[in-house]
Structure formats: C-alpha cells, structure tokens
Length: 312
Image (spheres, rainbow, N blue to C red):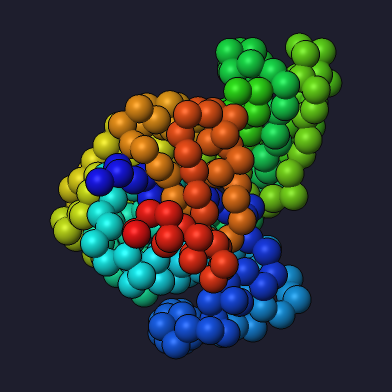
C-alpha cells in the first residue's frame, strides 16, 4: 500500500466558482455547503459562486477555502474508503483543514473556527496599515538578515512564509515593507511585490489573536487523529489536542515553514494529494522535492483520475 500525505493549501488559493462542479453533481456537497452556511450565517453558494467582494475578506475567505477542501476530501474518502493517510499537512490555513481531515475536529466546527480566526486576524490589524510582500529570487538567509537589520532600526517586518527556494513572503507594517523594497532588490531579489492583503499573517502583529484562538481550539478539537499532522511552526508531527492548541496558537505569530516541511516528509511518503481549489501546493512541491509525486482533487475529473490511480 502506498504511503500518502493529504495536503491542503492556504489563503490565496480561492477563486470564484471553486467547488461548483462538486456542488452541482453531489448531494453530499450540497448538504455540506448548507450545514456550514447555517452554522455561521453565510450563503456559501452565493459567496463562492457569485462575483462579490466578500470572498476576498479573510473572515470569509478562510471558511470558504476550508469548506471546498473538506468537500473534495469527503468525496475522495467516499470513493476510496480503505485509503488511510500516512500524515496530513497544510499551508497556513491549510493546517486547519489538515486538522479537520485527520478527524480531530468536525468540519462544521472547523468552518466556524476559521471564520472566527479570520475575524480575529482582521481585528488585530484593523487599526494599523499591515501587509505582506513576496520576495522572489533571494535566498532565505539574505531575507532574514534584511528583516533582522530592519527590526534593529525599529521597523516591524518578519519572515512569514517559506514557500520554496527563492520565494519567501515577509509580513509587517505596510510602510516598513515598502521602505525595504529597494533594499531587497539591491541584495539581489528579482521582485519585491506588495501583496493585496490587509492583514500581516504569521508575525507578531497578530499576538492579540493568540489566546482567543487557543480558547476556541480548546473547545472544538479532540484527540481522535487518524494520522499525525506536520506542524507549520516546527515541521515535526503531532497527534494530540494539547499539541494542536499550542502549535496553532503559535502559528499565528511564527512563520510557515512549508518548504522545510515538504523536505522533511518527502522520503517518508510515496504520493501527496492536494485537496481543494487549484494546484498551488502541487506546483510548490515540484520545485521543492521533485521526487515527491503530487496529485490534486479539485473537481470531478481530477477526482476520477486520482481515484483510479490511488484506489484501484
């Protein structure tokens, strides 16, 4: 039996119309949309399928992405009930989907949890001009040194997402990020691009959200893990409620070590399957660890292909 990592992308992977194929052809998908929407008072069909501004607001982006990922995962599990994960892994928000897929939290609770997480993140940044910037073509050490030097000068900037070699996202005060754009380029970066985000994820600016999130996690998470989850913070595996609460609390203010996590698991699994909209992680994995085959389940066609390859 092949060893499989079940993986989930984070914020930024959303698009209008994601999951529509599943919704239109599956009663299970429609029921999941309805129950999740009832929990948090959101019409997910309208939020995800109709052009609107809300899908770009993190309090709505997060539950929408998680819901579509859980629909894709549920339909895969229904098609392949005997397939068990070797481990689960997510990128930022995706770690909450991994927690849900592992069985440690019900999907409806998870939708409410990340909706509130998004609100907490928005509230932490609402009175400040926060943002994120992607640095392309510069090694991690150089980015880290520029951030450290900037902090010594009183600026608020931190490494936030280690995505792949030559791509690191930094977070902090928007004015401080803009002031460092030329510094990154002078150091050899091909691009230093400010992202269209109003929150600064995975840095100290979100410290006020940590304890409220931990309290929510304590109320909702259980110890029923089908398989371990790889932590964004440590790249190590965990499979208890206490670890989940502590690590996901830390994840708010510490960088996502996605690149390091994939390198840590690449030799332990045969296949990774990405669930939900798009192929963001499939693309990253190809550049991080070429030997790790990554498949994706995002619609009925891809579900059929993965089912045939993995379950037959």
